[in-house]
Length: 139
Image 1 (cartoon, rainbow, N blue to C red):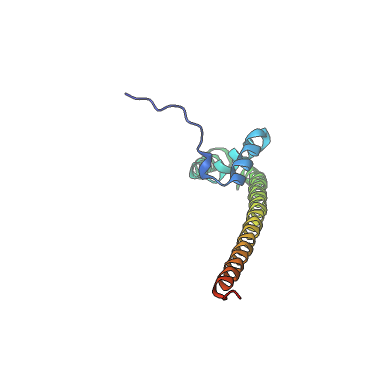
Image 2 (image 1 turned 45 degrees about the vertical axis):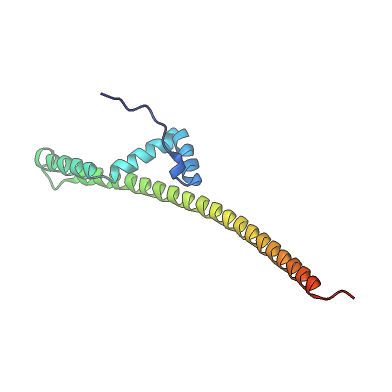
């Protein structure tokens, strides 16, 4: 039986901005906690857990029309909406950093292409001049 060696994540398949943002988030405990909560809150196990908890609460603990459950659900909605906004801010920061990176890369590419076009024009003009010099008879 062979065991697979411990491997580092293959960051060569990710955009450099993605790697940088992941490293920043991994370094901050609060952001790691927010990411975990956001990931869990956006999953089906979260939904199943809430269905079960709400069903148990409504059947066993509340005799009146669930005033305490309403309070708990409202507070949870407030916190979850905050985590959604944290996730949106994260996505916005990433998109801005990627857009800045892409802009810089495109500007560099434009400069290189312009330099190449100028060099080709210069070489073509020089070649044209040399060909005309050879075809003109010397006096």
